[in-house]
Amino acid sequence: MKETGVTRALDSLGRVVIPIEIRRRFEINEDEELEFYIEDDKIIMKKFIDSCTFCGSRDNLTEYKGKHICTDCIKDVKTFKA
Image (cartoon, rainbow, N blue to C red; front, side, top):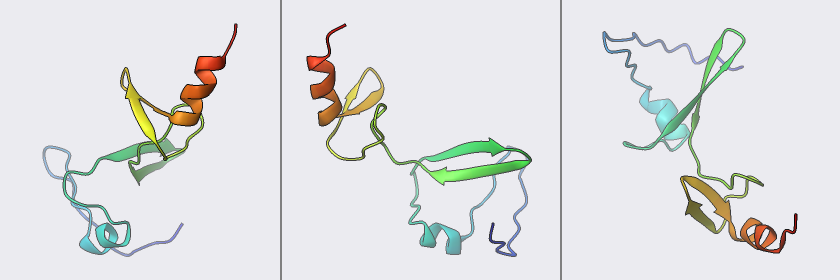
């Protein structure tokens, strides 16, 4: 893990400002969503990018009941026989 040497204080509402250098590097813009993960004693923040619930593809997504599904998986589901 690479250290940046940059620190930020948490405010009384639990907010922290992400340094501009990091926002630029990861192309994080205002109002974009971020995901948070916990790994051991680390908090990991990742830029949220929509992807297919089933295969992880980011192409040709359709939203269905709050989930994103790509056209290939939609075709697979249509032909699935239980």
